Length: 314
Length: 275
Image (cartoon, rainbow over all chains, first blue to last red; front, side):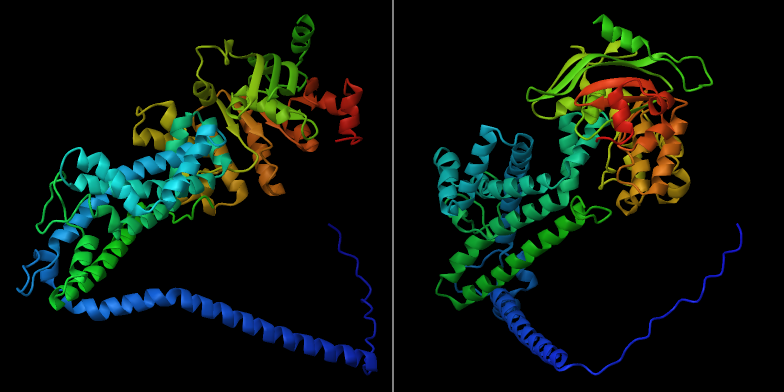
């Protein structure tokens, strides 16, 4: 390479500094006024948004605060390990209800998650078919159905036919509540998986089923887990579907074909009772229920977390 | 029929290749592919030889990608897609009644326009992804590791990524991701590699690397590359097919196509008069 030819020094045009004309000064004033006005409007709107955000979270904060104040003192070791004591005796706990809720929610997941995830996959795989459209519509209807109606369904199916209440019936009622929620979130999350990934798997010789069940589902897993957790959190606190399915039980039962206790049921019973002792226990039960749901969420997220912490298909 | 057969036979090896004319790997006869009855590829016949690179060029919507996707039966995965005609791989009809589409795709690898690493798998597992369906449970972990290393070396990413095998592929550059996808396609030892505009989303340096890779792969398999970039076709291919409105206008040795095309439409296209 030859030496670069030296360039002539760049000519910098002289900058003329002159006093602003009257017109320029007027423009500057208007600009300053505009900026002031915009700042004011901006501040006002941000203030409104902050207020809305605070109001939206206020109930949650108040509930948590109130629960802690009223219930925390009753949350003792005995609360987790002992059965309810008869009226008049002090102490006792809700071991039966905690166990029962865990069993009922597990049963709900057992029925609700496979059906919900399967139906969600179906809605994407067979998108546009008449059956898919119908299923999607029915899932939405089911989602809006009052939970007490689902309880009637489970009661008719599993209580009336057998002749007695059972944990199984309660689990089915909770599962039926979870199905539409899980179906729709699965559908949304699977839809977010880029079609190119599906194609790439097919081009490697994956069968269609294997592509859906491994590559697609795995890519959408983080979102599906979130949806499942929301569903679990919702049904864990449901009372209505359990009223005449699981029914409640004063003893720690694990038999699936017998009535079983549940935290929401126990809280309800205790809260409407006339005894102060029971009221305190109801507050404690509510606190434990919230913490339980939180614990389930954290555990499920930790277990299913993508090792790369990838968010969805991004 | 005879006219098409004749066209397929007139392919001549003018690439100045070092070895005698290799055997025909893929043979396409009167292929017509359509979406909802509207043909995207019309009556295409040609023969693709082993250890040769064939470029497919043409304006957007000319059917070149559809043509490519017929070769590994990916076309039929789209709703409303139909295929007529006959495609044979080493003499076997890949659309035969007894032939499973997945078995065809295991033997004919494909790389797409945009890199498609599986985001939930590690770099290593991405390369090994195809092995799971090719040899069911047969390969030991050590054997798979060897195959992964070999595939990544062939795709020229081993040295860059050998210390990051357990990491996510999503942190890689676009060029690295694309070469990872090529490694993934190579791991199953396909006999044919289909590249659908593999460098369209890459920067010039990555493009160059992929092109060098294609040149290396040419020693071992048949490579068919769809490209929008005529310079690329001229650089990497032995033969070039020109597609226009679903039809194959000509398939000629690349040098000849770009210097003395047989068909006036080809000449118009390569001189930039349309498309």
